[in-house]
Length: 129
Image 1 (cartoon, one colour):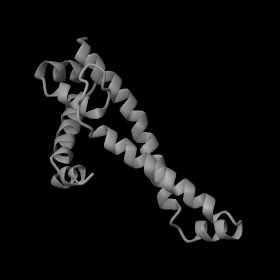
Image 2: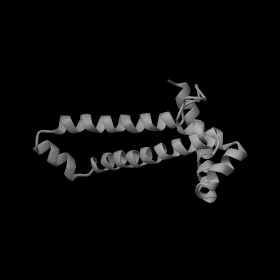
Image 3: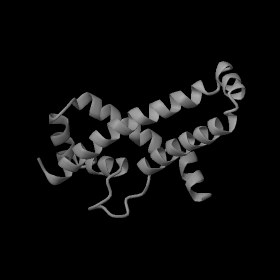
């Protein structure tokens, strides 16, 4: 396997666990908005602690997503999702990676990435920072 295809494999393994973590954070944030949770925390006098945890989870979600879409500043050492998809734009690397898994799912992932990466609101938000 070429070094670029190997890097794509490593990034995808990390990305998979990050996606699971991201979904767990989002689930906890959603559940925290239920009617039962705030009342129970208020009764336990833990509303401030819950707010701190909620903000920390939201920050983790933001950092994870922003890191995935970060620019590639150090092509040899950056290990985030954009690096993998830039390597996958090379047909040879794409073919190598597709052999290791599902070509159809990899094509779907690449198309989804392109759609989200082309989102004009993402570019606008990045410029406002």
